[in-house]
Amino acid sequence: MRKGFLVTVTFVMAVMMLSPLAWGKTVKIGFNIPLTGDIPKVGEESKFAAEMLREDVNGAGGLDIGGEKYMLEFIYEDNESKAESAVSAALKLIERDQVLAVVGPNSSKQAVPGGQVCDDNRTPMISPWSTNPDTTRDRPWVFRAAFLDPFQGPVAADFAMKQFKAKTAAVLFALANDYSKGLAEIFKADFEKKNGTGSVVAYESYGDKDQDFSAQLTKIIAAKPDFIFLPNNYNEVALIVKQAHDLGWTGPFMGADAWGNSELMTLCGDDCKGHYFSTHYAAAGATGATKEFIDRYQKKYGYQPADVAALTWDAARIVLKGLQDMGSITGDLKDDRKKLRDAISGIAEFEGITGKMKFDDQGDPIKCAVVVKISDTGEFVFTESVCP
Image (cartoon, rainbow, N blue to C red):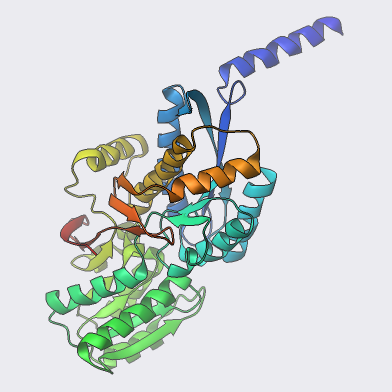
């Protein structure tokens, strides 16, 4: 019995010495991301980018906070691409895991309710990808790394008017998705302000889990719009574009940032080539730190990172910047969360790989958008940059 006990103790001590998280000071950060469900690639890219960052920091001996080194512990909670699961994931990270901050959710459908939980529980949260204003509105504990839809909607409208010489438009959106519905409303209001009431000649929606869009697309094609605006997630875009072509549509599509996933072309193929969407960065032709990130990610994981990976990198680095600006960690979780919130709020300007950003009083970044074209080889090629 005695000998067995000593062997066990020796083994446990050896494991602890090998694990940087088991010995010394750590900082816990939660990630509320969709690892399963409708958009699992979004969760995968967020996790991969976060792991790259964690390995960088821990490999260099930890994060320096007030002259002391802290190892990073990242805890990933799957929100299953569902609003209700995002709420329970946030509560687990806050109450069970006692994280200092939460990165995510990404999609506005999950980020809006998830943000309410974090704000109610006075825990700093930053969404990498959510563009709906309600995610941060009147929530002093919630931030984001992405531009907002009131900016993105007019970017899409202006580009379509210039590129397609469009005077009329049609819109097809997901009714149960805060992101899709909100951006559709903003786009419609802006386009009709610039082209007259009724210039959005078809405005159609679909329900959760719908796979057949032929009824809506038949109405849209019959209205003869100059283009179709699709503020939809990449997995739905692939279905919609293919079905529109099957019904005889030969005109252009204009999309938004939720198109920008590495899996879009796998799902959509030739049907999506030649079309445009607004987004946060263009991987093709990137330079400097952005190119360095893209090259490292591609070498490590085997595919080019989409905007959500780059935005997760920026969002997590904003949290780390806030941690360093705190000056010290007291060990009192409630106090440290408050200090971190104040520190993030105090970041006047941040140089991210998705662009330079300044933050307003809602915790939203003021930053540029880009429009990309899907090339004949399936690359997302920079077309133009639009700044506030």
